[in-house]
Length: 383
Image (cartoon, rainbow, N blue to C red; front, side, top):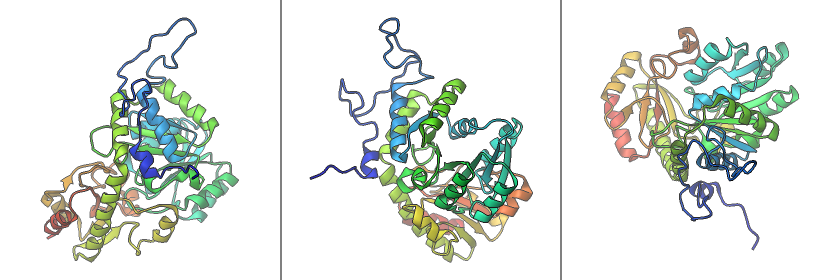
């Protein structure tokens, strides 16, 4: 029988498996060291200083590159540090198009750091190819930064279509794959050049570490990101790299459970009289439902929904008990967030309202608790 490539769930389970060949340790050791002794002049072990490379971090970087089917992976101290490194690919005077519905922290970085450094930022509805083509026709664009699904309105961008358009215009395609993870979506196979993750979220999965990951498709882009990583120094510490590796091992079982819960909760929310709109790509009523099914293996475990008014949203946040009112997402615990006040507060009010990030909008990161308990908690909170 011919050997075949293991399924991604198997590769996830084996993340970091027996990387120490001398001992056969099942778990990758934590190389908690800043520097490494040389055997002699010109005789490096391959590791010199942990900012440049560390064995624990190296295993994580190889693992994420394999999972995303890219050339090389890079681990950073946070998701925003990863985005900062990717934006370092562009020079002052160059321009980047970004999805108009973005995580507030990404928007803040673009507006307060990238733009003042000389990088031009244009926002467009990347779900509409005509809007992208219009920007391309008016401006010399060097990169396009896409979230799909977007945070928090869950808009879906056609990655194949946008990538084809970008290639015709010599534009680098960057995709934030945090909401999906490589278990559900593989942007590089759909045409992307760079994938970025807040590994704090689904990849680590336990709300206990900060981490950002980048995967580059080509050797050329990998070389540049590697240089930026070493030069800037915002690298992931060995223990945190180990925590992400540990989290990856259970990603498949965690996300499959959370996703199943999310599907049932979304169906419940659609029917609730206090809920006016539900944003979840797993619903057939979602505008991007069919497209998302073509490019992803599942809808994920994040739901945004609007309630009757801002007062009701505040009431829900006060009344939940099993669900935690907290920022972030992707952990085993279910979290509920108020984007307008929290994750997207730095986006101007007029822009938020235009996008639908209003005071009556809530974002739910569904965990792995019993679905009946979660629905019961939402039922009493929505009363």
